[in-house]
Image 1 (cartoon, chains in turn red, blue):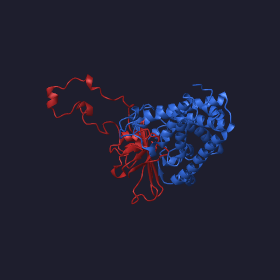
Image 2: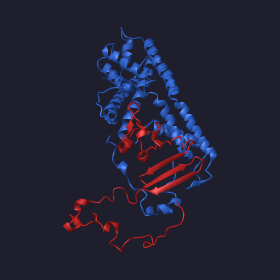
Image 3: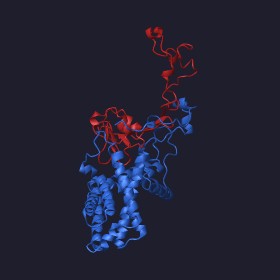
Image 4: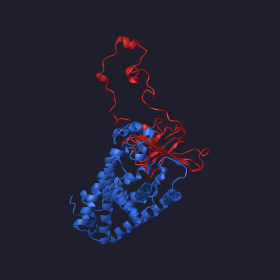
Length: 159
Length: 290
């Protein structure tokens, strides 16, 4: 499902060009709007679709499995820390999803390694990675489970 | 350079100048070229058809109402717009999207667009008023000069600050593709030649020839250039406001954390105590790595 750009919505800001891992999102030299220069090389990562501040990028389903006007659209709202999906199936069913993409304000949880002490020789020889076991909370009451945290796994699919 | 006069009136009144009637013929031909070529461009690109289709699609979604089988909160999403809502959308389109180039989220780029657009409008309107009115006054001449200066700042600013920046191929400022750059070059040439013409005393010399070449290139290349975007961009902006207001919004998701219903969902528990504004993530840095 390669991406394409609604030229009337795009303002040529370049976020998609920056983020595309295939380097196939470019700015058109005449219209100064984004375009996918090589749809065959698009691996449908949705990075550009999510990064676009104007929702100008969409993904087109191949005709063999999406011939009847399905649609999968997304809004990644950084400020609110959520991503919303709206999936419309070929038979008219609609599903809406909203999920967190961060639980803390952006940039507030970047570790500052400059202030950390150098690892000891013992730590270097250990099979544990840096900051383990604290970072995976195994030093604090063993393995954390839903049960130990007072949570329950609900049955079925829930949204 | 006196901004309360223009070289146009001086040329018309000069002994070996150009008559008002000839100037009017030239302007009329340019206007006709813009009209004919914009219509041809509209037909060729099918932009009008696109907008009608988009409007029809939104109406269909609206008529279909909420999907019967849906997961998520669909209640009260769609709304039939009243005439007042449509007028509001129109006013917002004119005041924000058209007058202040609201489309651009990139501030400096928005600024050069405002300079170019308003400079062009002032310059063209003042030229037409002077030539068809067969006289200039301090107001029309000042508007003409300010328009030309704004156009110069906007078009040249765009070329050197943005045009090259948005090309991943690292082309130089001076690498020109005439077919692609004709609109930018037409605006840059028109503003520069016009001001040069005025500064170097008007008349019918080299600068005047440059004015004629650049304006003819600008207005005569509408079919190939992006000149006509000034007609279909407002239509697109209006369409965007309408579909956002009536809730169809091209099938874009509409659910947000603000909904009470969302706050209590299991998947959203992690955000229960988080601030409503999490700041900017990837959008914190300007896109400049291409």
